[in-house]
Amino acid sequence: MAWVIDTSVILDLVTGDPTFEPASTACLQAHLGYGLVISPITFVELGPSFGGDDVATEEFLKASHIGTSEFWTPADTLLAHRLWHQHQQRRRQLQAAKRPVADVLIAAFAQRFQGVITRNAADFRNLLPALQIVEP
Image (cartoon, one colour):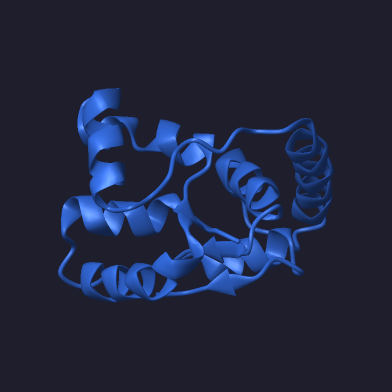
């Protein structure tokens, strides 16, 4: 079963960040045999890095052996709905930091897969403790 790659790890590759790119590349290579995919949300988040050029984004991901053809499902929507509600409750009780809804959507999507590969592990653990998480 495939691993979902969080936007943070893809951006390490895109930017060639000298601090994070080597570890992110090695991590993705180690998990390549399971399959690598991104959520539709990550594809959207990558838009600015490619000047809004979806063809260039697709080409980069294909060259990196990262799939983009997995669809968002109604079950993803229902889980994201519950996770966002839970997050907002914790935030109101000052038990959770303010986070973008994108992390909630990516966590809900990743639940159907092996898990998520991210540099934002703590954020995902707070959202969905049962989610398998790999950090580069």
